[in-house]
Image (tube, rainbow over all chains, first blue to last red):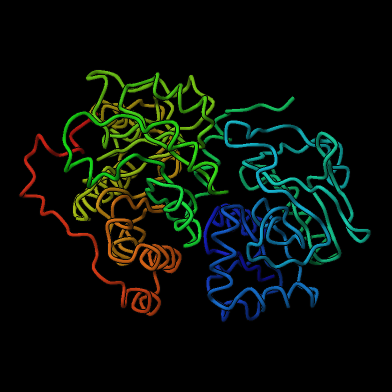
Length: 190
Length: 294
């Protein structure tokens, strides 16, 4: 299994280490040519405006979006979730726009409001997942094709639409591998 | 119950900034130029280091009005600087909800013996370091991110290179030591043994380490990244140059593609004049900002 990790900016190394622990071959993706031969993609946390602009300037936004539409599994965390959303409230920033949902950036506040909390994720079993939310986006509404896999405080924080998975929090900042394993077992090979 | 200001959350924001460029800005307009160019965060200041150096006198925390205007202008994280040891300036910045505080040698130190106890704050701190011992002392005080000091406001990368190399060399040296020598090594470094042990076990600093102080060109940024920096601070280098928007974008792309000489060649052309630099020998030791802090 060859998993591409979008490596323009942000916490891409953390995702890379986890996917390698799970037995995947990983490739850091910085240019369009590096998308070839990749079976799944992770878009890490970081600054969504930075990543969006580099994607656009390097002519990578369209081919990446096309891969997502063609069924290539993509998992986005935080900024990755923002880039996957069709609509970003109050922003015209470049995006992939693949998932039928509306997100609001920095909806929980600034860094002093960033937090961690236990999240119930039924598809991962009874043990809660430690959700680390850093200047996190909030999913305000989802379309009919989007399945909410977990919520916190009444808002969706983990969502799936066919081959696309997105979380508002950062499992890559913890030692819990279950969500990445879920992406591998259920979204990629499932 | 949500827990705020945890070590994971503080350190985590720095992890999200990795591979990115944090730019010094003094107005909302500059902040927007930085955001448009792809900065992953901005540092809100009253004056950039080159102007602080030129003006002399006591340099303090920026006027909160300027910081608030900059926070309102952009959606990316906003950092701001406090004087070394000035915990009340830090309380003020926390009350403003800035995203990161830089306890910085660019400003005039307020305490000659102690840095701020950064554990007491919910907002995370970044601090400068010239070597591993200094970095670990700051982390022991609660810094969740480290940067090289370099020599701010000079447009001369030589000191940032020296500091990054020293930190990396010391990490490699520690890794080669037998366990029984680590306590003595910790004492030599002036750093807590527990942190020294952690460096040996993980092969790196426990927090993100950026390069700062004298970076003026895309090639400078890529050089620091190849030497092991996790990301880049550019202070005077952008808004003291001929064409800030173009230079800012070039430094962002150079930081992403730091191992790709083709891209580096492309983004380095036609940028206009870089900021005029300062040769280190022309700055008296007592005028070097890096000597502030301990």
